[in-house]
Structures are given as C-alpha cells and as structure tokens.
Amino acid sequence: MNSKTASESAFEEFCTLNQIFCEKIIEGTSPTPDYIVRLNGTNIHVEVKQIDDDANLSSALQLRTPGAHIRAKINQARNQVRSASAGGAPTILLVFNNLDPLQRFGTEQHDFMAAMYGDLTLFASRETRKTIGLFHGENKAFRKCKNDSFSAVGWLYKATTDVSVHLYENMHAKIPLDFKSLPSFITYNRFKEH
Image 1 (spheres, helix red, strand yellow):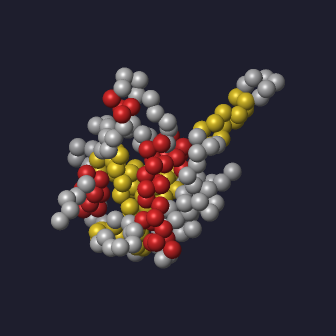
Image 2: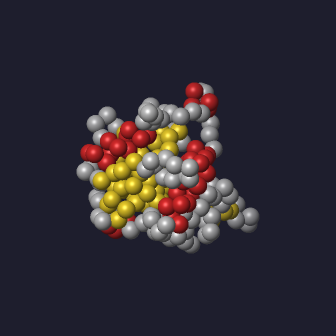
Image 3: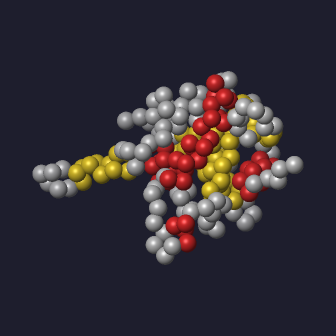
C-alpha cells in the first residue's frame, strides 16, 4: 500500500475541513488525475503535485526563474488531466509547496502567471526610453490548443490550522470551470484574453 504524499494529505484535509465530497481515483494502466471532487453538483477531476527540491532555495541569493516550478508541474500533469478533459470533465492541477517552510518559493502569484501565460515583459519606447506597457511573453505553458485540458491551476497551501486553495483560470480551457458556482472558501483569479 502506498503512503500518501504531503500534498495528498493536505488536499484530503482541505476537503474534509470544507465538507467536500472527495474520491481517490484508483491508479490503472492509463494516466488519470488523483481525485474526483463534487462541487455544487459538478464532478471535477483534480491532480495534486508537490514541489520537493530546488538547490537554489538553500543558496544565499535564492535565484530562480519565475514560473519554473509551476511550469514543470503543468508538464508532469498534462497526460493525467487530458483523459478527464476528453471525457467532458473540468480539471484542476493543484501545486503544493513541500520545499519551502513558508510555502512561497516558486509558488507566488507571479510564478503561476509566468508559468501559465508567459514571462512578464516590459515594452519600452526607443524614443522616450520609458516603459509603455507590460505583457506576458515567452515561456507560456497555456495558449489556444496547448494544454487546454487544464481548466485551472491552483495553489494548495497548508497553514498550521487551515488548508486553502487559490485557483488561476486557464482562459484557453476546452472545459471551463464554472467559477461563479465555486464555494466562497475557494478563491481565484480569472483572466481575459487581450
């Protein structure tokens, strides 16, 4: 019998604390998400991943590429959520930071944004030499017809007495998540294509 990962334990605790129906999916020969949850009558498939190591966390400078941890987890979960999405179910990837005691290094909001929609890039005027805009550029994991099986990617955070989930919408999802029907204890950011 396999023991639960820290991320699985945190997710199951989140479901128990919030009285969410949660069923572990038995692993078979084909890749599947980890769980099915039911929120307001909708079955949602959830894949839970955790960040366990990064040599840069122990360095004095703590250098990293924004979004790298999240982008890696999106790539690892791609096949697991694809089958559920193909069956018409919304899917969520939740990332748990098991690396940093503060659960921040690599899982801050700008990390999710950079991983999903690209590195934050400044647009400057050659004439005035001033910044005239920002946009998300290279290294995006999501765009039309790429990783559109994910309905959302989220941060699974465990405090001393509480567990929370914050979701980031995939605006390119084939099966969008009904954010308006989510319970108030699940927070989220939604996006519009520019």
